[in-house]
Image 1 (cartoon, rainbow, N blue to C red):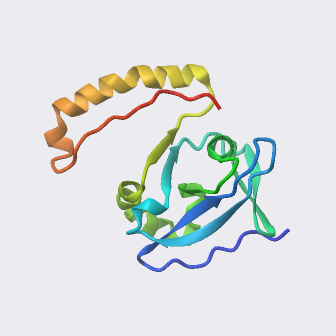
Image 2: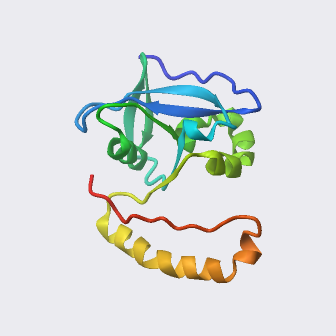
Length: 165
């Protein structure tokens, strides 16, 4: 199989991963699409830790395969729907190396234009519990100092808690 070839983006576009449906035991398959950044209903942004970049898994797009970090792979397996495609933006997949500087400049807009931002903490239950214990303290600090950080934004925490796979 050939390696994936990125097609150049226009200045008002981002790449979105169309994660194809499948069962948990089926290899991940996807398409990478170009979408206008001003269509917030078209994708969810995935924020995740890269994890060990030496540990990679393979993902398929058409006739090509490419490596992604094990942590991103686990996130995508967990987020994949069984019966319909899911549209996600994840930096490691949606940014081509030569475009990375331009995409980093758009990062705030990419996250704020997403219909939802999903935070993947990994599968380590201990780390997830610790993260959820810290979140209320961070929320309280931000709400007390919101004028210093987010003068024109509304702060909303709609955390559902960790979900079982």
